[in-house]
Image 1 (cartoon, rainbow, N blue to C red):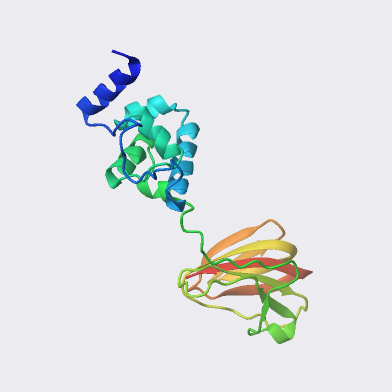
Image 2: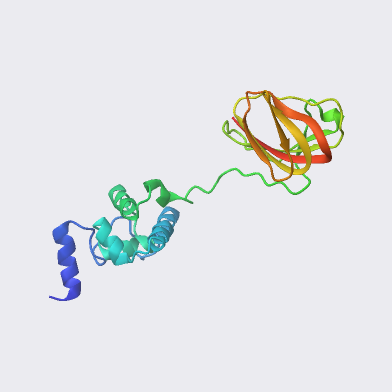
Length: 219
């Protein structure tokens, strides 16, 4: 018996996917990719297999699929069944959803050039405090809100804020004392503060102007 015939017999006996010359699920007659989803799955399987240092034969052994089926998947010439996808995910030790990563590419994003962004009026704005929102995602209740805050006037007005969720502050320039609840933090470039937004927070003392920090809030 030839090697090719032996592989066909082994696949048939073990219930594995059929050999290349037999019809297979979702394959096009011209041998080309069945569609974008197949191409995405092909790229992800190939990526995770090579990242794991596995050969096609080793992945076949892990999954119970034939080496020919692994090749068809990685060349996007077949549409995988749910069972095949689960076997591949188990063999690669990744969630099934990882094999679809990149299939849904129509996602919102906001790009903001340096020095741009939406200027937001808040308490204290008129006293030399500038709040520039760097981006928002529409219709997302869990979206982050990054704001570039610039303090240029050492006035006696230091607005305190309270809001649901959390906030992360990263100092870029200047020095200040920042308050959160009953605590005070002396902050300078490179310092950061993660806080519960429900506690009153804001600048208490401006030590070295101008002051610039990035504030990222999340609900």
